[in-house]
Every structure is written in structure tokens, then in C-alpha cells.
Image 1 (cartoon, rainbow, N blue to C red):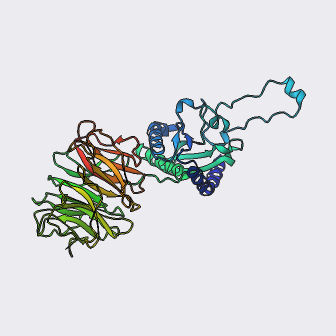
Image 2 (tube, one colour):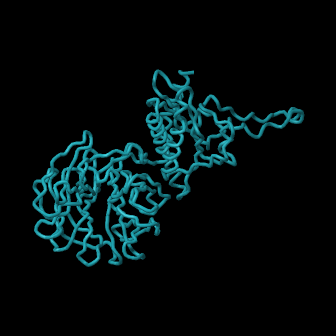
Image 3 (cartoon, one colour):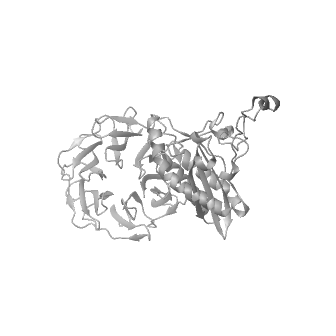
Amino acid sequence: MKKLVGLAVAAAGFLLILHAQEIREEVNKSKGKLPVIALPDLKGSGEAQAFMATFNQTLMSDVSGSGVVKVAPKTTYPLTVPQQPSDFTQPPPPSDNPRARRNTPPPPTSGGGRWLLDWSSPPVSANYLAAGYTAPQNGVLVLYGWAYDLSRATATAAEAQVVGKRYLGSIDEAGARKVAHEFAADIIALFGGESLAGTHIYFVSNRTGHKEIWAMDFDGKNQRQITHFNSDSIEPVASPDGTKIAFTSWYHITPGIFVFSVDPVRDLRFYNQSASVNSSPSFSPDGKQIIYSSSAGKCCRIFIANLDGTGFRAVSSMSSIDTEPKINPKTGSEIVFTSGRSGPQQIYKMNMDGADVERLSDGTGEAGNPAWHPNGQIIAYAWTRGFSAGAWNIFTMDVASKSYNQLTHGEGKNEHPSWAPGGTHLVFTSNRNGREQIYTMLANGGPAQMLTTQGVNNRPFWGK
């Protein structure tokens, strides 16, 4: 059995590569109609079974929240769920003998879940099926995971197989989440998507009595404190490679910028020029410079400096408050920022040398918190357009055309959007449930998921 499983897994790894492009083309042709996948609960043997609730919840959350596939309702699934390819059978072929057809009972119309057709036909009507099982082996949690293309439902399970791999984790909840994330990533990749697993969200929380910088996994798990200043720290951002974070802190009485390494957590000693305020740091696309806002000379201008704070120079020159600068991650040649130079704060764009300043928001209401999409063509931002002062919502804008799209609609105050590294999701702050917490949603404004509950949490940044 182990040998057969190993051969099936190896073969499907090759099929995964071949079939991924076919599926992406199919998704593109569907003009927004998502393929449907059946995702039944997997079972585990021995001590692995105790962690299957965590596994199945994680798998469902990752796949259903990916935005590239729709999960068929579990209430439509057959009672029998095959665990591996050998559990599937094929419908009996029709008899070629007319006399035999008259003298025998009609063939079954369903395999009770053991036919691939049971999953592609109503009521499930899925295009794909994921299945598998877990087992403890030599102190390791082993997941055997398969996915099947149900457009080949009349073929054998081996012929319809597009994913077949073995995943390894520890025999605990962390291990169950790990293998679920990895299986989900392979499923999502079939449809041209990118898993969020392995990415991190940095945010501000007051749960210890001070505003400190915290981090968590993309799904809200593993929340952990980064700073222990016992002083207010805000505005965390991560470097493009995920190895460093920068933030603003009042640790030295006046607001200053800190740069930390992430693993291990260590202060890298950023030099703050003499000013009453140095704040709103952000990394350059190559991770070698910090762009920020400073009151040095006049309040407040955009500056750029080396990673250690040396070599700083002013970019903007207006005697107005310019803040929240972000460099285009794709081109590295332009900056979006928030400014009060025309009255109520608005979003502007300028070149890296401070030239060709252009207002992006239309001047109505207040706009702020600009964040570049990884493609360098779109920004997410907060705006009070159409609402009373202070009633913020999340919008996106195509920078070239200035056309915009509203993603949140009056559900409390919604601010500080940040893109997932792949650009498929956004994280943001909302007080829709009474106090500020961290939420994520699909970049098209799909359902929001709350990630934090303890204390007040805000100003998230999504990094690698």
C-alpha cells in the first residue's frame, strides 16, 4: 500500500505542473465565474484524529478565502468520502446485450460517493474534488492529499488526479495547521492563485497597557509581541524581503523611527535627525532606504535616508504637513503621500526628486493612508467621500486614470489598508464592532474576517 501511495503521489506532482496552466486558462475564459471544488472533511487515524478539526477548519478557510475558487456546500456531499484513489470505483458499463438488459435490474444511478460522477453531478455539481487522510508515522503527522479534475469524471481516479502529495508536520495543532496550509497552497495554485501562508501581519495593540508592535500569521494565529518599550509605538511596516520592520515610537520622548530585525528581534539603530517629529517610515523597494516624514526645518516634509538613518535628504519642500510616504514597489520612481497642502488632507503623487507633484484624490472629504498594490498601478486608501467628517471607508484607485472603487460601505470607521504580498487581499482597521480591530478581506471587497479581539488593535501592515 505504501508503495502504491508513493507512486500515486509522485505521478500527481508531475500532473500538477501540467494541469495548472490548463486550469488557469479555464478560469480566464469563465469571465469571473469561479470553478467549484468539493472539500469534504478529512479524517485521521490514531492520535492524528484529535487535530482534524483544526486541520479541516484551516483547509476550508484557506481555500474558500482564496478568491480563486468556490467551495460547494457540504450539505450536498454524498455520505461516503473516498480517502485515496484506490477507494474510487467506476460506474458499471452499459450492457451490449439487449436480452441481458431486459432480464437484469437497472444499473445503479449513483456510487454513493465512490464514483467521481457522484461529485460532478447534481446536487454537488463540483468541477474539482479534494480528498485525503492523515496518519501518525514515526512520531510525524503525515497528510496524504489528492485533488481530482471532475471534468474527467468518467476516467479512473488516477487519470483525473491533478494533485497528489505527502505533507509532513508535528503531531499537534501547529502541525495540523502546517500541513493544511501546504495542501491548500497546492490546491490554490491549480487555479493560478497564491497562498497567504507564510505571510505576516504587523500591527499596533494596547493589550499590555501601552501601544506596542505585534505580529501574527495571516489568519490571526500566533499573535506575538515584538516591542516591549512600555511606551507608545505605532506605524509598523516590513521590508520587502520580510527580514526587518520599521515603526514610530515615543520611547525617547519625542516621536522617532526604529528599525528592527525580525529574526532575531533586534534594534538595528536608526539615526533620527534632530526634529520634534520623525515618523511614518516605509522601505524602498530594494529595502536599502527608509522614506519618512520629519519636522526638521519645517513641519512636515518627506525625507529619504539610508537604512541606518544616515545620508538623509529632503524630498518635498512645501511648508505643509506631508506624511505617509510610500514608494512605488514596481518602478521605484514615484511616491504617493498624504498632504494638507490644499486644505483637508488629500493623497498626492510625486517623483523621487520631489518634482511633478499631482493630487490623486479629488479634493472632497479627507483622504489618507495610501498603500501601493504590488503591481505599482493601484493604491488602496481611506477616504471620507460621501460621508460625514471622520467616517472613513476603504477605496482603491487606478493611479493612471484616477478611477476608484469603494470596498467598505459605512460599517464603522475603516482605515489603514495594506495589501497582501500577492495583492489578492487587504488588511485594514475597523471599529465596526465597537472598537478598533484588524480585519482582512478580498481585494474586491469580499466578506471581512476579524483577526484580533484583545484590546484595541490598529494600523496593520501585511508583509512576507
